Image 1 (cartoon, rainbow, N blue to C red):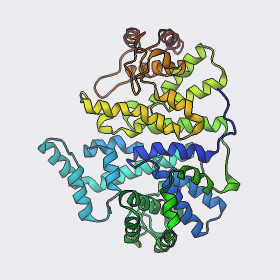
Image 2: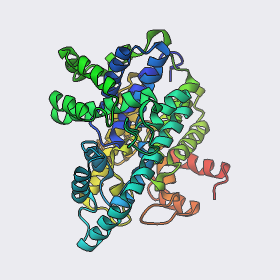
Image 3: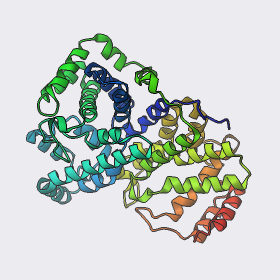
Length: 450
């Protein structure tokens, strides 16, 4: 595999992977880059210097980096599809009691028994404000932490941390007000509201909803700047264009554009693997373990350094598509219905779609997205046969199956290693490559797993 060292820009990588963040927040594809487009126009209009614009740029692309961290808790508290909940809640003015009450009644515990739903509604009625603070704080702090792990500065981390603070001091979780709120947070929240209503209802609704929140959510001066920008028809045309991802790269201050080293790319893929794994307590550290087993098997086969790096990244990101699957399915304690299995199976295609946004990852996208294909042609998403499944995919598949069985799941406890290997042995030749399985057994022994 060829080295990518210095051939990718940081903006390309973060912009492409931001599509995964859109999924976990329940937003239409491209939400993060559209917010970046809106926010950068505001930043320039505000007169931010080059460093300030660079900080704003990555605050906007990563504003939702922590959104997977509260998904399981949100499902636990509200008993609903958390992605749908997040998507719909962004259309609500959460300072308007009537709007919030109507939203809660229409979303909490839908599909549960009358008594169960009634208990949830009473609980949310009593504790909803505390729950909201908890969920927002979890998301914002986790997002800030991920920004630091990605190698970004504290200014960017703070921009993410205070995303949900309001100009009038009634936001969450820290009740900051006015100029106490970092300008990057103020711009990011305004851009978020502008995009959500633009995509759902059009240009006029976007302008109306931003204006409605002037003086409460937003600095009136910032709203005035947005109104000025919005008078340009080209602004809206570009916002809805098919090549927006390419345009976004041009909005990063050119003097500060940064190329990505192999080591930086490793850090980025590891961080996004963590974003995936925090979505459910049952997948905690799953991606990192699959990467460990994958790399160990590949070393057994004598893979050279560049190929090992490539394969480790693919393993870390193989389940990134699960950010597009709701926790009411991922964390369901009982047997899944057919339509729920259909939703689960979508994650492989989602993985391929997300990774395909970065052209140098095109091969990786197909290979990682195929990790549920089977040698006998009964896998998904494409029903590939043995000769169509790359050796790299076969390695990730074996590592993924091994970790999935040895880890606890909502419907069962963890299975011991020896029992897991016995189960997998029975799948050799159908789901699992026998040669890869032999290597896995050696790896398990070398890693002294019990």
